[in-house]
Length: 223
Image (spheres, rainbow, N blue to C red):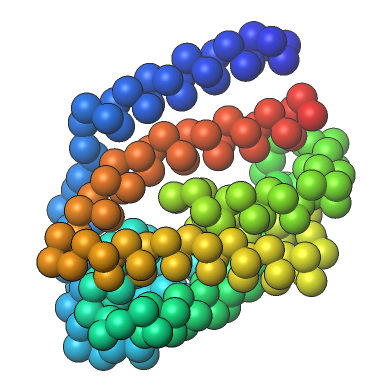
């Protein structure tokens, strides 16, 4: 499949995923269970629970910030506390992202070299990804941090290709601040209707996952 064929194919799939996301909500009992636990945990433990859950989220444990952060915004007493929530969650995101980064650096590269051939990824593709991250890694990290679903997994490929750590730190933190402030302030403004925010954003998770996957393959194979 050449570049043009791949772009046409991926566009069709992404349009389909976007359409499905609009008209159908993917939800499982496990997701509901995790959401209920996270909400109860944060309500009971305050900032400590907020920090723990959002660290886990950025370390790729499926705890949706789209639910937890608006909740924290809703229970904030004023704008100053919204800023505090934003900072606490962003530091937690940074810590969790560093954990995921080093997991990718420690085990991901070796896994791709040894087993990548089974999913048609060679060492040459890995070298292409390294070149991309050296040139555009800061932009990729920044924009990924403000995208649902993708924001929690981008740290692993960054670790696999050993992206510059200073750029990774900086772009992760800045992108996380923008994302978290938006969610916290929206929760603060929405009041008792804060849960609607997460329900709307979560509907499009499957689309953004598809976008991330197709973009990653495009970079590795055709960039």
